[in-house]
Amino acid sequence: MDPDVLPDGVELRHLRAFLAVAEEGGFSHAAARLRTGQPTLTRTVRALEEALGARLFDRTTRRVGLTDAGRRLRDDLAALLPRLGEALHAPCRGTVLRLGFTWTLPDGWAEIVTAFREGTGAGVRLVRRDAPLAGLDTGDCDVAVLRGEHAVRAPGLDARVLRAEERVAAVPRRAAPGSDLARRRVLDWAELAGLPLVVNTLTGSTGPELWPAERRPRVRCTADNMDEWIEAVAAGHGVGVATEAVRRYSHPDVRYVRLKNAPPVPLVVAVPRTRPHPLAVRFVEHLAGGPAAGRAPAGQPR
Image (cartoon, rainbow, N blue to C red; front, side):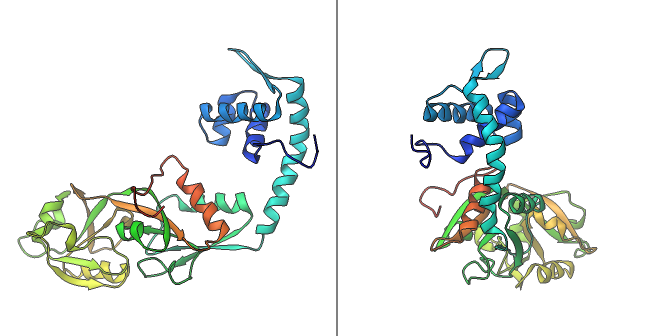
């Protein structure tokens, strides 16, 4: 065999999977280390054995041991893979991925960004834009985290739905005389149709069109960003509706009330469909492949 040609089908993930099993002494601990399922890991190792034409592990019901071929491969890869990883990360050093968002990122994103930096060697710069697509359509960022159906359907974007976020109502603590809004613990979505609405027209995900045409809330006040929106609610101009992430916006004159029967909001990660940044594509695949990820509905941008 030509040493400069890899066997057909062998990928870096196969080698990492094999080395994890060899170092952990079994599939269950290796699967936990790689954050994957044991059946998936078993299939990956079996695919490597088939590609190499050699059995790498002796498997019994009680133990997993390396064959002679497996030991040789483990010893070679233990030194080779770290050097290969270092070489593959080197081109990304100094590269900065611009991650756009509108008014806030979901919980847990500090860890996600840190893991991506460590896994690629690239930097990540957070870019906030008070615009429907967070500057993705104007070239201000390379990848964006967005909320709402408009992001799923936006032309020119490759969008992946990560999960759905629940909506909450933002109500003024100093409600109008005779109103019990400030004391409510739960509101029904249908109840909001009879209340004045404060709408974030640029980066919000809730407007009167979400209610039936025959019974919709009237828009009392509009805002261009989240800061104006919450101040309008605090001033008593009306009720606001946003995703649960808005609870980060603490305000002494605003209470957040759980909504029942409200349509959820898709949380989306998106890149330009034309010539996306290679690291942005990798970022999307990393997120969309996670256990909490979903898919865009059929017929919509992917």
